[in-house]
Image 1 (cartoon, rainbow, N blue to C red):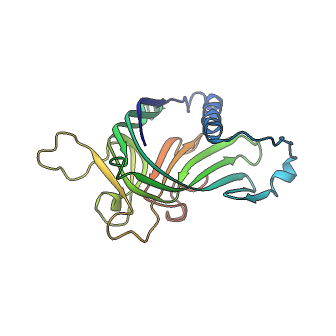
Image 2 (spheres, one colour):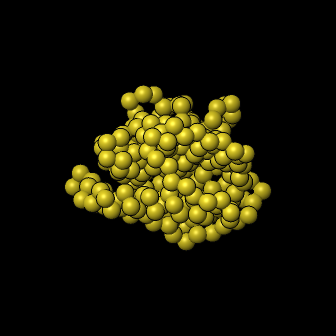
Image 3 (cartoon, rainbow, N blue to C red):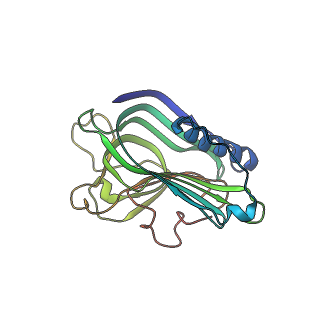
Length: 242
């Protein structure tokens, strides 16, 4: 099924207004939940903090775990999609004296056609909270396993991507508000890059895609991890908890 979107933009004021950024991030997560949720007759019952820290639930295709100050929900579902987006922008704020976008992509294509789409195996939602103040510190939305192509002109990319996605070796490339480039193709009028998930030679490895909103710290802002699953990156990289 083809879905076309003209423009998606997410802006937040991180350094000067952390509380506002937290509310924006929370609203973003709630939007995902409400859009995907089906009607249910179940009633909500509040839990005490001590009960939340010991909560583990699994029913059908959903798994929810509260581990200390991290809440993680996994949806064991399979999706197939072909989607085009004219422009996607996220994280517009001042950083190191420069006001710009963390992510600014154009001519985005998720999958190549209705017959050559993107397969997504499972969805993961995670939120980290400060153990003292209970304030939201980080939100992660994504999947550990994609199969298919993601093509875009990455004018600004912040985060990490696996160079195997673009035909290189299996290693991480870190960028901060920089373009993603690949070897130029003669005659190609569009400087686009294709991330080939589960590309030749790596079909046995999980290649995921995650959007991360960090409220504070050295990796503050909107980051993207492409081509790795939750366990692939080494300790000490910004994928770790803030």
